[in-house]
Amino acid sequence: LLVKHGAVMEEAQGWERPAYYEPGKVVNIEPYDYYGNYGSSINKRNDYAEILKREYTFGRPDNHEFVRSEALACRKKAALFDLSYFGKFYLCGPQSQEAANFLFTANLNKDVNRTVYTCSLNKYGGVEADCTVTSIEAGSGTVADPIFQRKAFYI
Image (tube, rainbow, N blue to C red; front, side):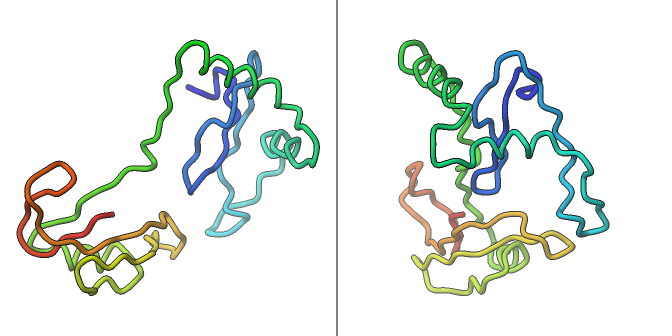
């Protein structure tokens, strides 16, 4: 939907999001080719990559005026930003340790209040997510300090 309205997408922290909007232009985005790995073939034509190359400059990129107009619109009117990729989750319950061991590559058998940087992999061993996981104990019942039984994880 966003691409149909001129969004030029970018990747940030493993999530695809609009970088800016180019009014009146729809960029065809080819399916991700995994650089020819996992049984995929490399895309023959990638207009999207060509658009992104315009930003590889020490000067002002071609998209500067698009970004400028969006920033001014946010400042003078209103804007909505999707920050769902910054989501935080609680993993708790009687099998939370087993679930954490299954979901993440790092050893999460740590003391409470220890944070570990780790990855989640797909069935091919490719990285699906990288995140920090903190071992936590039950809290007092506020939104930021939930009550649960046993050790849990804040992802």
